[in-house]
Image: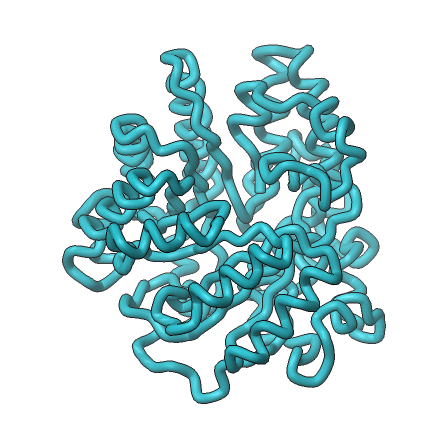
Length: 391
């Protein structure tokens, strides 16, 4: 996760994270990416069931509830363990988390245990009443997926009206006083609509947006040929940077982030090096605190069946199951070779990563993408930095 507004527009200084000792339990949410202990943000895919059928769904979600879904009692025990372990955030996802009947009880229990609880949702089920209920639970944030303007979004989601209902959900959350933001996964076919989504953000004064680079997992594995080329990625990131700066210059200052491609960090630094060298030096400090990709270390995933994964995209490899052992025990067990290597990927990488000047701030980027094209420890094919830029 790369904070564009934090880094490029200067809303965060290195001293901000140092003030809290860089401890995840004390850091405000917007500074968590700069923690030193990297206690994992845990994505809980509470259900596989979903009312949409998105073409890029990493979970292969559909309308059916998985027969081995964790029970309410089992999920409550997981939350107990995460709270005791010191996980700073539990992110309820799916499928569509609001399809799960006990999701409000689980979220309320998590908040009561001191966890910051957030939702990742398609938004189509967030009526005014649901938004009020979520706000009353003490939810920290709701992220609503919006993958382009109306025709594009509905095509990706494969349900007519999904765009309109997602925007209604945004309105309902704002009316309820619940912090809400947008989540946009970038493909070749929707990248030209990034400016239009920025227009929506500004028109509706939405305080946060995350732009996700495509990860080749789940149904997204079939979309590798729709990923951006390196040149197209650079163009898309430039648009994100330019539009963010323009909004800040006009007095609107939302939190803008890019996710799942840590080449964005060095790219922002190199751009600032030309525009504002003093700020570039501060950004480099923040990027070193961030440490790049944190799959298997600063982020983890628990599936609806209790399987534990390095992140929500590593569904094909489980480190264990919370029905048999606590997440905290699985996460700290060094007997799993992959989990141990993911906690420090650098010695295991090869190819152009080994000579990259930005390895300490990128962390080797996404191993799932590298694995999808044939080499788990080879270069991430989505890295768009040139040989000159990494030397």
